[in-house]
Image (tube, rainbow, N blue to C red):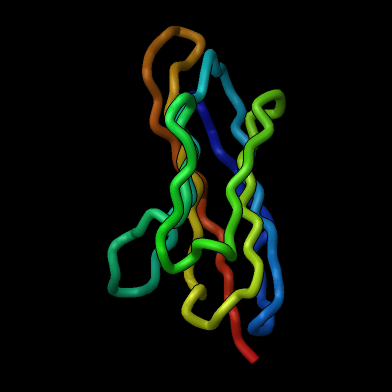
Length: 120
């Protein structure tokens, strides 16, 4: 079973930065999708940033130029660097990874969520 553990959320003021991390553990053969989503109360979870093996990286228009997704394949870890944070970025952020486990079965794993609050 593949498990994801997130870290890095917290309370910051507008204009400040945060970096979220998400580390995968378990029997992993390969990962082909890394994504960060966010969700606020009463709204659906939305994709903020993603990177696909062989396809590239995509960002929601609301975060382009401010957020950067990156990954460390050797550590099965994905990061979300968030700069110039705005109050509207306040949300619970979830990481998501999809790939193949050690039994060559597909997996679709989610982190536990980490709260990011941007407020003065």
